[in-house]
Image (cartoon, rainbow, N blue to C red; front, top):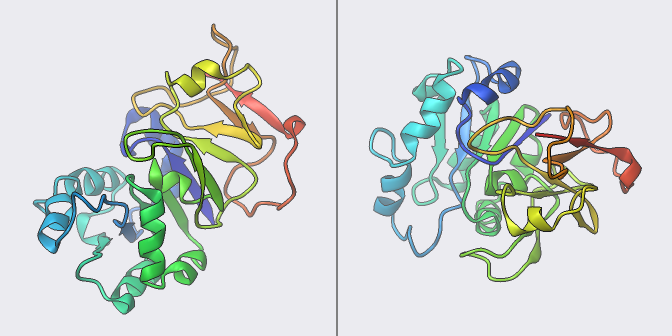
Length: 244
């Protein structure tokens, strides 16, 4: 299984296209797990349509357009519809997909809705690509944290889908107070921390450290994030910096 954790939804961005191209094929079928919406903004099928419905949804064109850059036509992209799908139809969409795409939003509510639809086992049996941005990135971790923002007033740990374990991810990290307070060794949150590349620009790459010398990410040595975690608690010496 391949897990792709992103900060932004712009999967067709030039700086990212070459990295993802080996994992996204024109023949792939995509199931978009659109369960991360805010309850106060999406209360009905009509509200859901305004965000995700094909041809008229606010986010639909950006999602299908991103995959179109890899040769995947819109008809191969299906959305799990919280209001219209049954448990059976949602499971069939997930099981028929080569790529599971988890959207940004509220990761804790996304997991609650996944469990409401009895989808956890089907998602965990997936053998293809699981990818997502923001909330869709952290939900791929067995346990993740969320820093305070407009949706989450306090720092807290949450349960996710246990695809990956042994590290934490701070999304939307660039330029935040968390980054400014970080030491050159990285952010440590009980385990060595990780950060995504910026949604606006340069993908993280190895090289000489910029000034100030704060790593963009920490990466487990020899680990490509496309195989199963060993399960052992990682040590700081097992990680290397990935610089801007």
